[in-house]
Length: 598
Ligand SMILES: [Zn+2]
Ligand SMILES: [Zn+2]
Image (cartoon, rainbow, N blue to C red; front, side, top):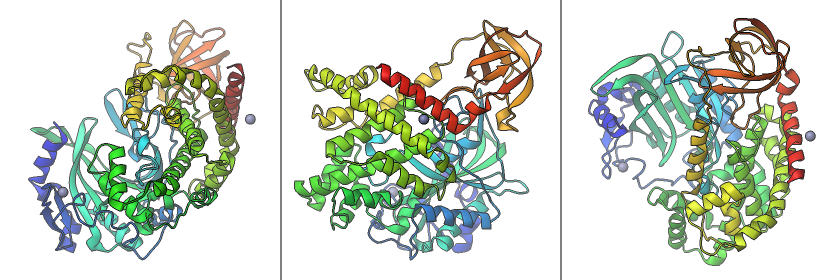
């Protein structure tokens, strides 16, 4: 069963799968795109193509279709107040370090917050219904696009609108109504500008229809109706249907601001400051046509350097303009984006390292430093962090608590990179031919040589577009393989107390003991994962050395007199260590020590 088959089936019966009250009430017309035949719904009698193929695609750049102007902070305030006014609970974001999932290092979508995976089964835990959440999501597959395309970020805020249809929640009709009213009433977008495109979603054994909504070719959100399980010839309605509407907050800001790139309106005052410090002409008339071309071309070519070449050619930019304006701007956008991601990840307990999700953070830091070196930009990282946190804390006040830790860790890590350059120089001087993608991965994995450094040294002219995706896959599959073979057959899943009351003291029953490992029926100790260090504390009289998760069973490694199977033991979580600030500090000083011994 693939997406295309589901879409064909659902689009053959639009009345059942796609027609919602809003379309009837407002008089939306269903049309098939003249270029690609895709079905979409519109109020604009003249529109005959889907958003990907329309002439007005990306025409909001330089000419936003709204009378209101909302930056990132204000956009969230508008979204939040709209949904709260409409009986939603606004909840705080979940950590970007995805401790509650074995198969993910980082939170990649708002729905992940509520998913509890047990083997092949996914269940959901919603703290409220319906709800809205500003979920910071980290995605590293498109790293080479960040800073260049105008709309790719290594982290972004997904507006998550979630509902279960029951006495308090709602289903399709109400969902699409709300999204339409959010755009028209709260953001002041003309209803003729909004196009809904028929699509489907499939994953984790369930599937359903979805409606993506676009304004001027920009996909603002996607309302997914998770409704069925089974396969296409024989499927039934899920016991728990779920609305999973995810929208891009950065895009909401961008469409109202109409800036050349989304980066210009989503990071607060830091962008303008760095542009000024670097002496770039930010009001240059080339920016709007150039980035409009980039945005449009991105759909047409796979290769980013080809997209860039075409945009340069069709806007007639000279080499001098590219070197003086575009290239340094791309570098500044990259630096700001990557630092924002590091602020979230480090604040939530992850650290740059060579293992697990930590590698993504390390490579971003190295990209920041190499980019500054290559472009001869002398920025003060501490100052960038301060200005960004000052801005971000309007939406995420918790970031204030970890401000100093973020600065400390980034400064140590940047220093490590500087001191490793001599070693890299030696390795690079031995290269006798242009390295392939496989060579690049080996150079990074075994010698820590980043492709950014090779670009800076002019060993390669472009970073291959597949590099980050391949590296990311390599590390993702490692997380799945990390699970050791332990004698855990027949042991029931561990009950995780930190999803409930999160007690710092509790008693539990010993289910299994082997060597110096103990499995309990329930636990309040966090396991290691995603660059996150495990909890310490005591089980009976024993100190905890390590906590790991294997499937849904938590294994505690302890030292001291091992308790017996069947015994009830009292357990104490080391609260000082658990505390985020302390944890980051401890880890920082571990890095300090190892940095010195290199
Ligand atoms: Zn089309
Ligand atoms: Zn310290």
